[in-house]
Amino acid sequence: MTDDDAVPGPPDAVPGPPDLRASDADRERVAEVLRDALAEGRLDMAEFEERLELTYKARTYGELVPITRDLPVAGVVPPPVVSLSKEPSAGGSWAGRIVGGEGSSTWAVAVMSGFQRKGRWTVPRRFNCVAFWGGGEIDLREADFAAGEVEINCVAIMGGVQITVPPGVEVVVRGIGVMGGFDQRETGVVGDPGAPRVVVTGFAFWGGVGIERKLTKEERRRLKEERRQGKPARGASVRELREEDRADTYDAHLRMLEGHRDLMRERHEERRERHEERRERHRERWEERDRRRNGDH
Image (cartoon, one colour):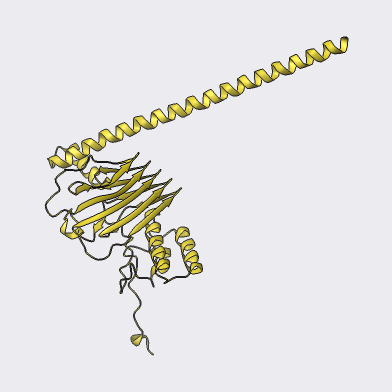
């Protein structure tokens, strides 16, 4: 068989330069494809462990490419590749972000640990996640959507899940909390025309599901630059930017307070240790004096 007759291989999994450094989110997306392949029987445990180890050791896109090249996502053939591209979503057009398909990740579990779904990924029609004594982060700001309405089902037991949505997305919260709760602040906010609808369901027991609306870092930089140059901006975006600025300031104050509390705890512990040392020295002196008195008698 000549080179011209060779069967073409699968498409390259990395649209960007192979020497570009990979992020933790990139490695996690590849790991999710491996977990799905293990659950479907496409990989045995030994292959899964070998590839997972290579995934977390990978430093560049080029090292991640071969790991999932022969694997489909969610049973779809030909396989949709794991997108590791760093490009932002095109122009804010919601029509371009509702892409259909099965989604690049359908579930996540955190047991005394954590999980993340963020960056460029496709939200399936239903995403299930569990946080037990752990935490999860689901960031939809740069995500595509498999349908105009998607459901995120969260089970938080003595743990928590944080969901971040971009401006313009409608949020409906239907979760139930027992000694826990679901954040309702974004309920009732009208979405943009053509924007997806995110329905949050599930159950929280001694745990919680938080929902916040935030701009992407790129959008924040753009709006700040426009504000600095005196250019007009959309009112909703400006309000979001101001709210995030206030939230950032509040978070900074919280971090300062936490640092102050940690410092006070350290100083209190040092004082307690010094007090214990002084008590021990006094006790030793009394014991020595008693021994001398008994020896004199």
